[in-house]
Amino acid sequence: MEKIVIHGQKPLRGEVTISGSKNAAVAIVPAALLANDIVILENVPDIADITNLVEIMREMQVKVDRLDAHTLRIDSRHMCNDCASSEAVRKMRASYYFLGVLLGRFKHARVAFPGGCDFGVRPIDLHVKGFEALGAEVSTKAIIEMKARELVGTNIFLDFASVGATINIMLAAVLAKGTTVIENAAKEPHVVDTANFLNSMGADVKGAGTDAIRIRGVQKLHGSEYAIIPDQIEAGTYMMASAITGGDVKIKNVIPRHMESVSAKLREIGVSVVEKDDCIHVIGSEHLKPTKVKTMPYPGFPTDMQPQILVLLSLISGTSMVNESVWDNRFRYVEQLRKLGANIDVEGHIAIVEGVDQLQGTEVQATDLRAGAAMVLAGLAAEGSTTITNVQYIDRGYEGMVEKLTSLGACIDRITDDGPMLYTPPQAG
Image (cartoon, rainbow, N blue to C red; front, side, top):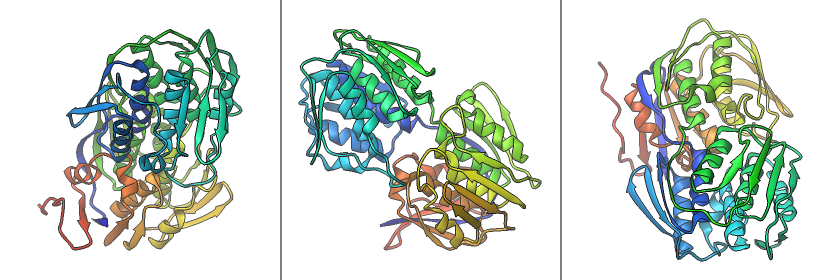
């Protein structure tokens, strides 16, 4: 088992380049299978979730080649349509996108129940509702199995703006007969990026980024070359890292418009945030003030940034409040922050934070992907040494996090149980 060890209280300084969007890539990589052709994807993040997706597709007889660390060539002309046997499916929630892809292309799908981070009940009932509205028969017993004589476009209203359901219904509908309208659709940047990618293959998707998406079915899709957008959450995580350490960091390869809710909240707290064309410059301050945060669907404050900002608020004098309105039980990681000395009380969906002067390093664990990032941020701020276990969660969504932080001056190592150091921190001076 590998661990991350951080010697904290070193301000981060320099430049960091953001990788491709994890949340977009885990939808777009499966979506490439709709084309029955060759697709080349660029700016694909080199993370564990993509490795799992590639494993699943190779089991489906899809030829996947890495042209370089961030470019995939996907040839699905000889694929089969059954991925239910793959253990990799159970490792990540986004494997449910194979449902929409296989149903759209073959009108039949058998997929194991998805896995991923555990922070409360995360049903796929809205996905099933959408597939059934398009004409599929769905069975959810030992595995998820769907079949349809044909898929026919219709109007689908989502009970809430689910990103996963919005994308999955889009994937199934692009090859359906007639027109599908998804109302109360999610507006997140990765929804828009997935729609843009589908259109690059010849789909007819309009309205992505609004609450009504219209999909006119086409007979077939063709190959494409497409570059995935930068990662909104990775960018936000490094923005928080700069603020937490009192640093001075330029975050490059970003789309500032995607970061508006995070930038606004940091400015409200007292952090300097300067936006340029594809760069955000974040400078920490000693004079920060508490605030209230409520997670919301895009363009609101992202739930995936909730653990990271909670770490920052735990170090700001006064009382702050975080309201998690998207997921149940997403405060499970708070107990780990308490080990470091954070003063946080959780009452249902609300965390009440009393700021402390400093955190004290100790051993903590990553309980999910974004909580793992929060533990890293806490370790950067803490006095002494912090050891983080369960780092496989962090690998799911952050490319080269140790290396990137090291380049910014963090004293951070990745080690195995028997001691060999994988990365070497910079020497003092």
